[in-house]
Length: 563
Ligand code: UD2
Ligand code: MN
Image 1 (tube, rainbow, N blue to C red):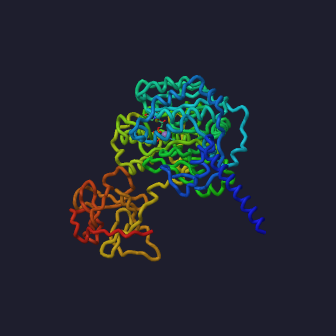
Image 2: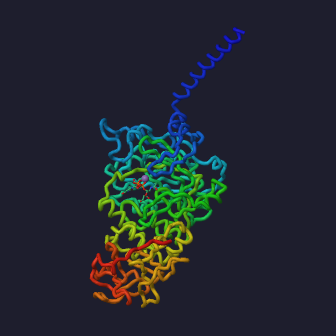
Image 3: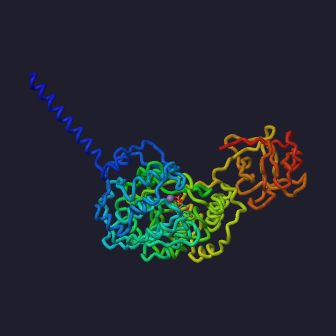
């Protein structure tokens, strides 16, 4: 009995020692598994938010993408000396690693020109099949003072993780970076061309330059700090090949700006925006989510984030490329998205295509005209050309845009006419019905005075009457207060003249009509232009406007919200 126990203990001890050795050996292995373990098998983002707030909450299985062998790495870079390229521009001791790029340069440099990343796709994506004769694409990457390590990783990930025959060329557009050497040296890589701007143009004009130089029939745009993932390209080219009017994006995974961990983004998101034209990721509407029984299916999206997409070159040109009067950064993704949808195309996100991107919290580069003014100029151009009467909500949400210069839009309006595009209303109804129109979020109210309520009998006959709340409030006593108008359906409270004592009546609403503009002043309602206040004196007659006397009961209107 004792011997059996001793044997068991011996066996367990040997197993433990062997296990420990195996574990230590595994951990010190230099290849794919160690580099991915920090972002791979141990990744559990339980609700952890990235700057983009859209990380996947599931723990995903560890599947490491194929790491090319040394000979292959040599092949993709040709005679290009990557060591010299990276080592000649390293962070100096004591320098802030975030200063120049708004991400941790030290961590990026440490990773070198490539690394293994986790295959973040749904497992069913791996069994998708593609046409054997997919057409090749030109990859267009514009950059302005990009870090060498992130830029080289972008290029190298494309060359090693795409079927070679699908990459016709990589066109870099150096947007007048301080050091022209980056562009010159990178051109030594097989398939890579670099065009250098003679002055700073911004990403929009730079992309148009790159696209014009492209020789393939399909364009693929990437930011200069990406890492493409396993089989990222085939699903996108397949969709565009099947229908050239589709413009497709991958799911954009998150590369941490602090430690460069590669993190899976949620597969349940699409692009959206608010009326100030601020882009946001949002959940797919619940009905669509319920109807999705195949996780490899495309997701329709009202807008794309902007940086990473595939588009047929002929369709890009037919639709008017980009608005080249937009400067530096911002707004072009809305302009392109509205145009694609409204002029006969569609936008989708393909969950089986994954590309990692370093999302930053600030711009690391200068805006010659200032960041805010540039964003306003670009989004104003998008709103003025594409949003029809709905642009008023853009201005309401971004009042600082009013009166700011945005240049001539005549060419873009002519383009819209030539392409015979749908209205923005059509876009809202058919593509983005979830976007709430501010007028529908109005506040209904009674306007009470001394227990009586303002009531309309006919347009000319307004007066105070007993408040009626049962069984329900009659339409004649229900007012909607949408500054600066006080409305009842499509009728608005208007003064009849600008002098004290003038009658107030209802007339059809007109946003430009200054006689219909009011604002609250304490308990009173003041007509904006005349400065006079709504007054119920004499109580028998219709209300008038009179000198504002805030304490007077006949000028005190107590709004009482109703549903
Ligand atoms: C997002 C898009 C970006 C663009 C932008 C709105 C993604 C992943 N990124 O912002 O592509 O659509 O929204 O305009 O969807 N660049 C230049 N010249 C400049 C400024 C920037 O070439 O004057 C380059 C820059 O080096 C980078 C790209 O343009 O490769 C996008 O700039 P970003 O990375 O600062 O934009 P991002 O990702 O915040
Ligand atoms: Mn970017």
